[in-house]
Length: 251
Ligand code: 13P
Image (cartoon, rainbow, N blue to C red; front, side, top):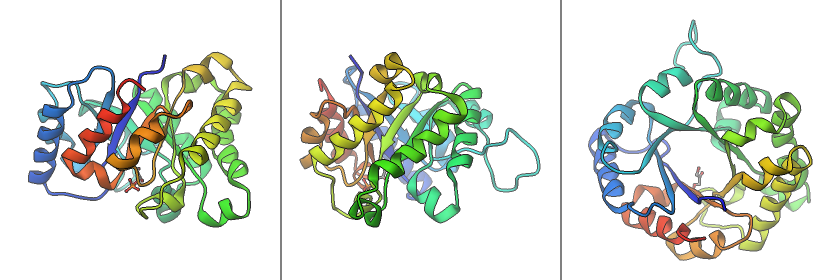
């Protein structure tokens, strides 16, 4: 039995005040132990959001981390630094990082290993662009993104990790993958990991991300290989986010 996870990726949004307010509302509403709930604010809001999370069961995550631990890397934040701020999770390889900031498969693997070395749990994002889906290479793309990690580090590292399938064409567009489209890719991911290690594959939590809303969450999370969601826009509204967390309960 895999405990479902719902993670809110707040992306580049909010003020100190609104981040604290949102965190406070999420903590107050997320009381169901059957769902692991994570919020991922921007770096500079981590300390204050961490304060708000002291009392409840909501966990803290970051949206990225440096591949390096320290040194002359202006503008970066390292995994050990995030650990100091109480982060348990770090999103890596988000499509926005890949497409806008040039994070290659190899860089994402370096970041993944750095995050695990610091004792944190990576949330590794994979997903295809619209033209890739239309030309029928979804599995090749997702397989390549995942394969970069499997070839470098093996499947055992996924024992302490989460994978998020985020079709790029569904992110922030209002277009959601159908539950069956998402399930097919989730099953492919599990099968690919299973070729290396069946136990790790069986326990691996694979989240779906891309225009998840209160109205479509239950159907998505009801699919066999979908273990929760990575939520963007709807995570900025506490009521919507809590409704999505509720939909993951008991799935
Ligand atoms: P939306 O839920 O806004 O589509 O964003 C998904 C996402 O990118 C989460 O990481």
